[in-house]
Length: 359
Ligand SMILES: [Zn+2]
Image 1 (tube, helix red, strand yellow):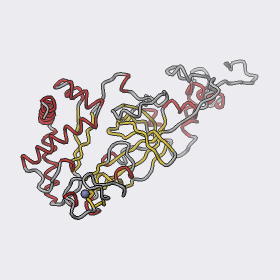
Image 2: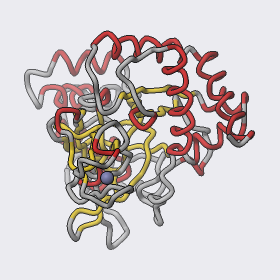
Image 3: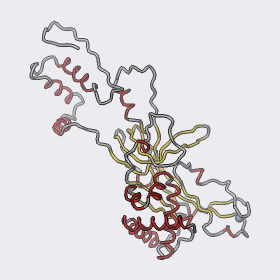
């Protein structure tokens, strides 16, 4: 083994030990071992703190952030040696049966790690981690996908007609047909491979449609100065433990690997999510939330109460409610945080009352 590869594997093991990941891994192995069931693949989730690992070894930290698939192979090898040395899973036979999923706790807060879906070109070929943000607009039900499958050579005399040599594992961005198909051939004798169906491992997947938060301005009725704009949603994949972790309407910050999926003649960019964080963008005060909960029985009561008490110092409550409501609406959508979309709702007020001010 190359000395640098050996060193990087040592570092991976040291990291697992120090971060508590090794104990979790041993516990996961125990569950598999106790089940006595033989699987095509054994899936292990390893949580990675990029700052800690970069401090331990910059090369490994760099690899995890920029080449996560390669980094997963290092952990795969380390985990296989650990399983074999400590006899953790009796049923396990080959290294190919270990499926390592690396999940970074965060990414460095630098622009090169942010994927903005409003900006082009998008990097969807380097298969590395990015963080992004979006609002959920639609979601599908939880479905099954193939986490891993075992293939055997159909030629009975071939040594690969048994054993666990041909293991196919789902990788980020791969479609179902990339993992399981019927046109694979044996490397040794070129006979067709057939899947050993009883070993197929299924996982959960959920497709979620998201839009960039900036698109909301289009729904808020801004008289946008730009002549043309287009709202494009994007698909994110939530797999296994992340299924059902998002809700429609919520805004999430997430880390994932962008991928390009070819489906017939269509090519779509999607993101395989590895961690999710709910964004609390709400700066609404508690008493407002309480008022909203009290008036939730009617869709107009909350708004009517707000309009009624608005500007009560200058206008007596109960008068000019429609006008006050219009001004409130204008204020709500006048946002100076986002210069690009800030615009005003124009009001034309016709009245005989000299106290009414217009803008
Ligand atoms: Zn063969």
